[in-house]
Image 1 (cartoon, rainbow, N blue to C red):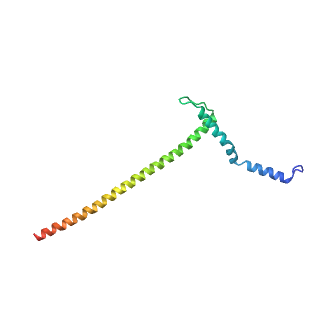
Image 2: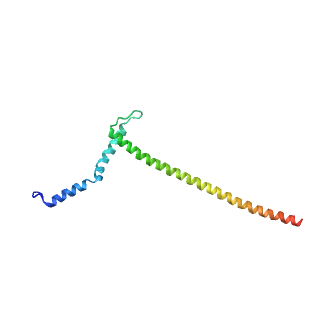
Image 3: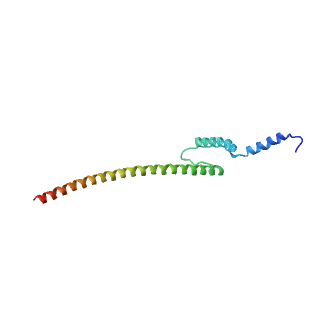
Amino acid sequence: MNPAVPGSAIARRTSYFAVSRSHRYSILFALPLLLGYEALAALLSQPGKGELRNGADALLRGAFTMVAGVHAMVAEIKELAARYRDEGKRYFLQIEDCSLMTSEVRTVCEALKKKIAANNIAA
């Protein structure tokens, strides 16, 4: 142990380094800078002209585009599933209506059959 540095100061320094090695502090520091950079790049870009970007910027843009593309694809799949679900409900209602109509036709046919049979027996 170093006599010039008290024990609690060493413990504090080690706990500081242990805590500051966490990724969340780096992200909290870098995220506003990144968002500001992207906002300024978007403001300065002119439609119809190409953008000049460095390698790291192109990698980050590609990563963000990939993540956004995945989220857009998931949203599109959810929308498609909702449309299929609605169409399935519509088909189910049509089948149910046809089933009820078939039941009514069967009842009418049975009654007509009995009436014809009764007339044939009477005649």
